[in-house]
Length: 387
Image 1 (cartoon, one colour):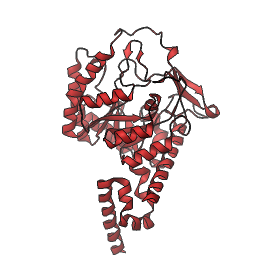
Image 2 (tube, one colour):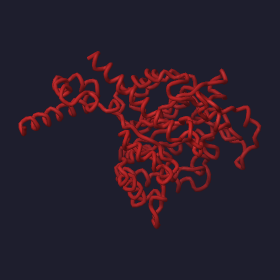
Image 3 (cartoon, one colour):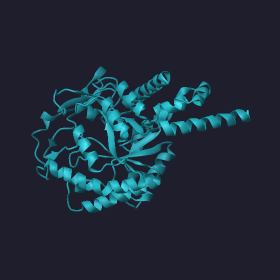
Image 4 (tube, helix red, strand yellow):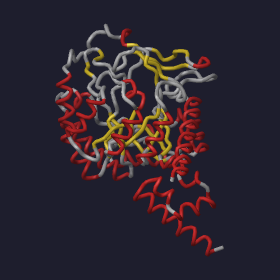
């Protein structure tokens, strides 16, 4: 019995080495992997195609008690959230300081989850994005945050370049399949809203502010190997109330990546937004994935209703409907060997739910996790048949 266990551990080490060098498919083609598969099964070797199945917890831990327990039952153990200081009662340190970050990470660990991506860093706001007085201090705090976050064991930051008017929808309860409630957007409903207090800002000034930020933080991110994952504008229209949207085309993302070429200056692959820009999602995953630019994935589906690009009118959908070939997208992640965090995004509100947090209700999230996991298992098995 002892000899059998020792032999199994040696084989597992060989598989791990093959995985680190050549990715999932190389590991599966290893002769030892084929023998171990007979004992432990393919699924346990390459769970979720090597990705970190995760959930978003933007409403806080208390509001997500049920989802936390369900996540553990589903074995979807990644926790994605901001630095929620409600998890640090009595903490006097700032949210970008080490003890505050560790308090949050330990709180997630204590409920059985792995805090693996910060989505919405605590010190990146309007001063930086609009080039206002005080941005240097804000950027300095962001650099401190990166260093302390990395020290805590987290190495991905998802951020956006949407000041003042961030994520926006014009309807939170559009009836969808079977009466499920979807989020939706129609630019015509908001195009005449008044300017914000910042007035009508030029696109080029937003580019200058982004360049200033990237040139300050990317070299520091390289030193500590912190992955910066810029999220696309959502919605991806040209302006809202005078505030430009510059991360609204694939070409603009390519421009951003060229400002500071680095393995740590990358992208949050939010499939819905990039699809509404008119791009072929599997092809884009392969292009950016092979270049090492995809650090984090929002796996979601949408339907354009406008007929123009970028879309000005669309609705969210269930993961198994909409305009994106989700199987082809999953196959692309598998083929590029993506091993980072992946989570469902903008799920429908389903029967029996009160739609208190549109896009992030529990039942739609459960459906999405099952769907994503099924796709992942399918592409792994197809890859094995090809090898």
